[in-house]
Length: 277
Image (tube, rainbow, N blue to C red; front, side, top):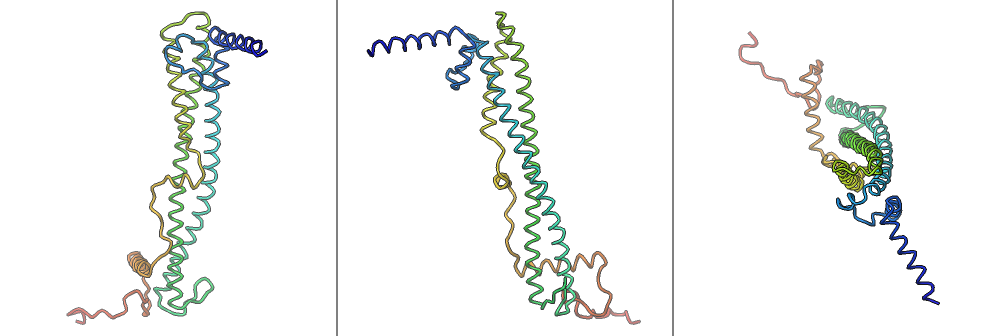
């Protein structure tokens, strides 16, 4: 009984193998459905140019769909980045104003100081300035990261567009070349075109493996920006206050009243010899 079953199966296998060898369309279909069963070497392409062109066309269309998804996902990432950039930029602008307000109150040296509806002792005001300054530094880092991610995403979109245009060009060439091959006009130029298509297919696979699409955090982790400090020390607060006072003085914003700020000049400057003459 078993021998009766084996013989028909062997006949089917032999017949299928014959179809694959004789019919380019069947051969290409089997390869498309099952994957790259036969390695398309230059010799294999030359032996079956029509079959290879059918396989290459199907693979190029598949790659193009992958590239279209990449572009769509990158576009979504760009939209998210744009929204986050707007939000973070507004917070940063407000935070920078608050830092200046707290620094101005520190420089005035009058305590308790009332700033934005709250009264602060000197220690509380310095703590508030340090906290707000730390948040501002973090927001600056976030804005820089988002801007860098947006640039990266834009460049990746351009790369995807270029690769998609290559696919369109190759598809047009394949359609024309296949009709020529079917007319049995196999030329060295035609074979060279098919060989170049093979290199494009390999390049597509490499590009797909390096898919730039990822979560926002994954893209941000690719950046080379240094990490932002989570807090600000008293030394940094003092440095900021000194810089703030120096900036005010250079801009001509020094107070003209007799009371000097705590972080400004607190002693009378002695008169130079001859000044009282």
